[in-house]
Image (cartoon, rainbow, N blue to C red):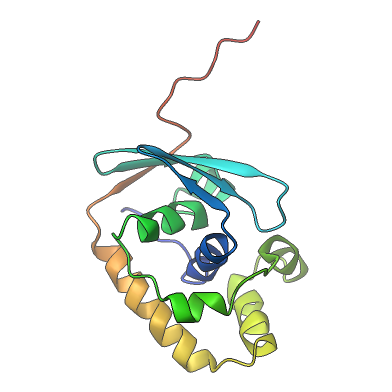
Length: 150
């Protein structure tokens, strides 16, 4: 990967998984946002992953939908016990309230949940180190060509 996401995106992936917002099929996943307003498509072929979520599309790094897929595929560690703490978090609303300062947003949620931030961050570092080592390529959009407009 050429560009890495903010480490806090792992928490958003946890929420997507524990809230059952990821519908994984053979070569594609539909991932619904934390507030249910949007559905993103993650597709892959070999080690090339495509997604139309905002982070992947505009920032060029693996957004939380891609991270969630990689976890469900067993390519990244997934800590079920920790992830369960992030059930039903509306990350869209929280990230907006912190003006996309993901570190402050994550700290707020971690404190709200009564968790030890150092312990949470240590677990996220494990996932992040694995993410850094993955031999994958991240691309914006979809593997499938867009449908012709009429």
